Length: 126
Image (cartoon, rainbow, N blue to C red; front, side, top):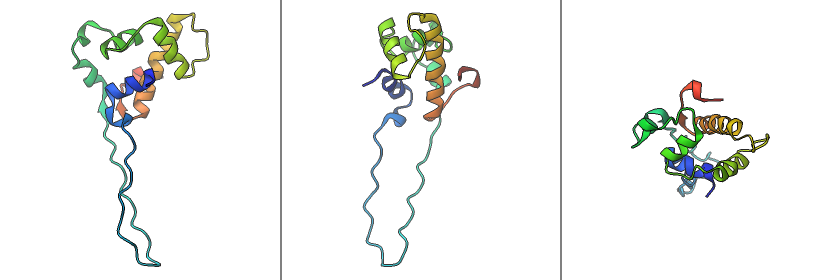
């Protein structure tokens, strides 16, 4: 499992679940249109409230630090893991500048959480 998939699974488990297969339907009379499938319900997860409610959140600065966010989620926050995450998210700059990379990673993770059903404060999104 990729590092970003692990982050997604811990914060938005429904977004990382397998796609639901359509149910088999009764035969349709010839010439009659097939019934439309109901749209999938999207439930927004309040990322800020979820993370603030996790044990240890008060002692970590997850709002600005990718390291603290990963620690809060009980994931490996080592430089090697962050470089792997940077590769997964297509970071185009030099990964030896870890401060710049960390800021970029945090913004990208928050942006992708928002794109996958997370309600993320606007100031945390790139």
